[in-house]
Amino acid sequence: MSAKTNKADKLQSTVIISDRFAERRSPASARSASENSAEPLEPGSLVGRYLTLSRVGIGGMGVVYRAHDTELNRTVALKVLPPHLCKHPEYLRRFRTEARAQARLNSPYVITLYELMEHPVGEILVLEYVEGETLEKRLRHNGPMSVSEAVRTFVQTLRGVEQIHQAGVVHRDLKPSNIFITRDGQIKLMDFGIARILDNQDPSLKGTMVGTLLYISPEQINGRDTDCRSDIYTLGISLFEVVTGRLPFERRSDYALMHAHVQENPPSPKEYQRRVPRELESVILKAIAKDPDRRYQSAAEFRDALLGLRLIERRQSSASDPGNIALLAHGSETSAQRIWGGALVDLALVGMALMLMVFLDLYPMPKKSLESIAVKSTPVQKIKNQMPARASSRTPEPALATKKIETRPEAVKNRRDKYESLRDAWGS
Image (cartoon, rainbow, N blue to C red):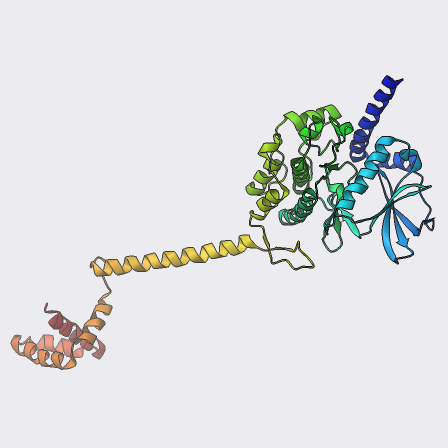
């Protein structure tokens, strides 16, 4: 009997993972199965002091409702684990682990937990309610994100992941469906159902493979101890999907998918999206390295690598918004600065070359310029005194030649006089 029980427990653990994988491959079938197994509350039902308003969604760990807190007059979310799932120790343990993990966290990047309560309709988590959509839904509706938008989203996400790691929690399932984007662009992390609390040394968790196979890290597949670097891997896979529109490993079977995560080298993101910069490609490939020691060793290091891409810049954050990140057109600004800087350097070099050529008498100056320099530098009185002397020393020209000179235009005559005076001035 005990052997059968152990076999059933293993099968149950496998079903949890496979259901998450099946939900991604066939959302409609997974959703209908959940609807048949769940016991939904009708709108208008009163659960304790919470009045249900509508059903928001169905997940692997229960049904989520939008509800009104009649005492505090606020909107909340109720995550209900139905009674038939509460009978399974594995589901119940994970549900309560989620509550304990979120109770530790006080971060603007994490959905806030208000209360854990037991009720005839099942175990209930009372959570913060926010308007928006998951990253998975945005990808499904709009396709891959631009590089700048993806980097901005993951910089915020990594800020939240850094805070949960500092609280001693490893999420272990940071896929796009667990990254929520509010209407004002704030990132909220959710679904801590398979999170690991680092100071919880539960021997029953040793050697257990948990996670979503499409995003799971190699050490999770091998059942080894996980730490913050497992979340780095999962986020790297998610970032790959966000910028390319597909996952690096997509296989027809669970075994082939696990083998790919553990053994196969990931493809280059540029194979699927040419606009991905080489620098971002390098960041992604480092985040999804097989060996945890070759990845970024913390969420802060991963975030700094994204910030170092010169796609975004951190502004001084205010107390109300510590994660204020502003996109700047660094590429265009840098290009313009380089162009103008290069032009100024070129002009300076050309000017210096010309000055050197003139100084070494290698560059012939125009005749007109020489004449003007000579005329300006020669005293007028000296020119007048020299002209009669030269005229008296010359032999008289024939009358015909004199006549020709006199018939020339006055401008030509003046130019000839200047040329003669120039020759006298330079001693030619």
